[in-house]
Image (cartoon, rainbow, N blue to C red; front, side):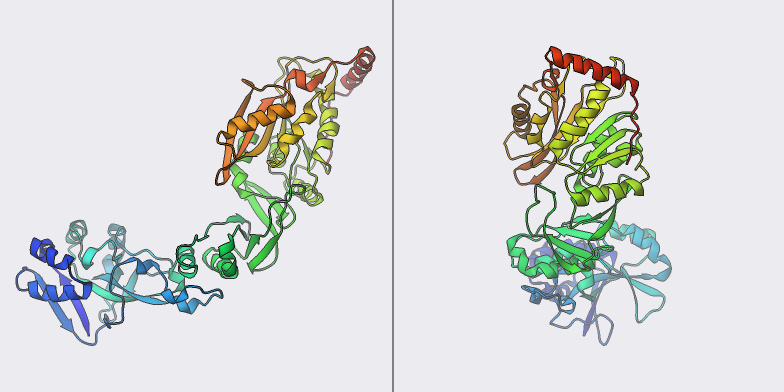
Length: 499
């Protein structure tokens, strides 16, 4: 048997006090009894009972407009191997019968009450009338399956008689969002992970211990619900401080971890299992590069595969890029060629401290004496190794042995660090001051990059290296040697950058 509920404009009178009081204390199926009782009292309201029609209402169907519309079948709780068929369930939703020719117009006018679910058709055929269609409405927005005044006004303007019916809607795995699926599967009350970092075709997760028994199911759900994701990995240990990579487990999909990414309109290729890449740093990479001007010199101490170095080179800066990880160094060279800047970047594969005490010191020794007060080009040193970079700042102490050349062109350092302190900016500055051996009050700025974890922030502290830190005044013999070096460097003031 199926019940068809036709509503005229006078159905608004359902909100009369007597009916509302009775309905509020009555279960949903019993409302139909109330409707029958009030059908002779409320003008325009009538209940029609017909047999063998499209909208069948068996007793087993869930006919309450509650959150079950957004929840898979409860039988999936505790599932560890994905069974998509088990997610099916049938719910009751309101549908509006309309003529085929005005369907598109009504979809636009009633879009705020039309049911929106992944993979679900909003318009279905009327099996008994080829000239009509049914619009599926959201039962949460159509209380008691009754159209509101605004919706009825829309229908009135289009000369449409409101005819709302009940429809048994079968929801399948395809109609649920990943978070809804995982919430239904994991033990009730436990945290659900549906977010991830995307690196090309790879989804990178950091699962909690209680989620690990469900990790393969979680991986498959993420692949199913995110077009373009063909591999899901979970980090199995913390980032190694030496090479900034970590062990990972492939949870679902292919095992190919060589991928392509695009950041700020620049393409990079990398092996995600062997190098460091964090898509959440895109804005920070762009922020630093925007500080640079054509002709500036950039020293990237922990360059990775080049997210600072390559866009800087494209901006016609002179770039010295270094990374200790041989894999990062090789991918850096690869990406320099990929982006046609291999002739503008000098790449190094060495420890960061050795890079500062070697190539950086050498280049500054050549270029700083040539800087004039009005010179527009500047030097920037980026140190993006948040776990350790501040410990390398002591390498700037007396890096140059010569008479100071004034304040023109003093290098600007952008050093990154983590902090769990209640005042992370103060903490990062004090640690930098301890490493440099001088105060940075009034001479530095701190920038909050991102929240890494609860009570853990990533910051960037930027400052010009103070003259008294960078320079060590030489003894007389050293001064003569420095003068000779200065004469030689004046003859070769332009550096040709090789890959």
